[in-house]
Length: 91
Length: 91
Image (tube, helix red, strand yellow):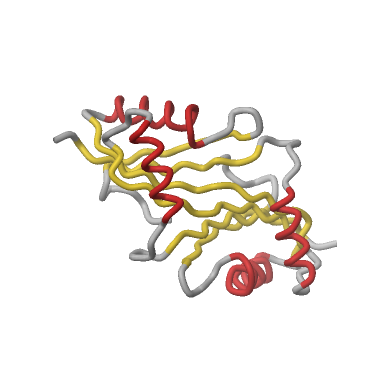
């Protein structure tokens, strides 16, 4: 039984990559009357609860998970924070 | 010409709401060998660049945008941070 960690992962499109979903949300907001909206970028936010031997292993595994599955390295970038489960700040 | 603000919005499923997408990601990670993964929750992360008269109006508009379009109040909860554009911390 290792320690439990909560990883908070943000996966967002790289600058310059077209964001049709963001464009659609922007149009929706402008249609609702929010003309001040200039740009919308839509990404993924994942919370991963995992068991690991220690913090170092947790970081190593989350890095691999991002590279292998959670983010598409061609068009997406990722960032993450990891805290011991139960000690994370609220989002 | 108002002031530009960057709103960072997290839209996540309410506790207890089934998350088939999260379940699928979890299965994918376990299949890749990350047996320590206990749970995955998938949500949306949006960055909204908007022009507003002042901070108060920016907060009021982003709150409305979340309620009216960005989040489904039945199954999702939302949170956001707003900073003057260019003064936001990096994600």
